[in-house]
Image (cartoon, rainbow, N blue to C red; front, side, top):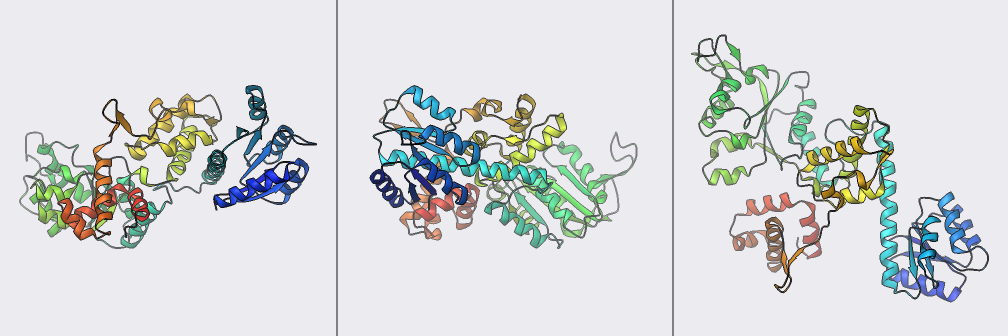
Length: 463
């Protein structure tokens, strides 16, 4: 069912016609022949939308709209009239109507308008629910979200947290890979120990060995005293090696030995020292491709990739966008000393439509900016950055080139993969051979594209 709709019109035959058409379209429709009957029905039953004629005997559509807006503001009202004018439209909107349709109208127009109205209502209810959850402190301070994609991540975390297995966390930049590493640590028997994080790409290569393994006094010019490396500092805890894909080739065999032997040798030292730390690594690179290109050692890859936890991009996480947005609203409003209670449903629609190439980090930046700029108790569309406010998820076309569609390479690849899968009846082995890469690469690509590919595959009949 697409939603429950109450039709209000004093023309019984029109009511029956609209009811039959909406039922065929998948709506659960019923009708009343007066505004008073409709108000009485709304006191005892719940509807997702109301469609009312403007000119009726007794209470007219505008008055009914005002009553519904006052008593049931959660129910959107669509006003229909044969006497359309700009003044009438403005009056309907001022009375609280969601939208306005002129007679005669096509049933497709009504179906589309009702679909938008019901979606708008659902989004408002979701925003309200999330606001209450954040107010009660129901949102975790670690990884936030309950989408199917994130439930898979949580399942893997729960299954591996109690072990000392080495974990590789992958995902695009800004998806929260360090939060996954911290969640693993916090749920492990090592939670009372230290969590030590290092970005392998941020430390200059000449200093990286000393940073990880430590050094003895006099090992190099500035080594005026001995220093314990991060592996030893992480004893009884977890060491998180972020951006492992950017580890210099010269360091890779040294790290491999440290992981295999559970010992490190400080720079300039003669003896190895044992350490006891859980190893978690992360990267936004395709390490298997790096192995094929000889940019990453194969033996090190298998050593760090004992358990793999892929973190989905924000665009594959559905309503998690709203959960995260509400969390950031509370965080930054508290931080800035402003009373911001949440976001409007229009803001929610914009946030859900945007693709978020920068993932959670970009969303966090967006909400921080909006909280700082807003003059209201709710974030409005005007508080959003222009690129999000004006975003249109529509294809581009080359003028004069027979409407040649311009698409990002990732989208071209995604569509081609689906086309090949459909052509071979969903056989991934055959599809991989046709596409020119192995089955594991195909799975990785489908995984990276997220739930959108799975949904498209289901529609195409691909298993």
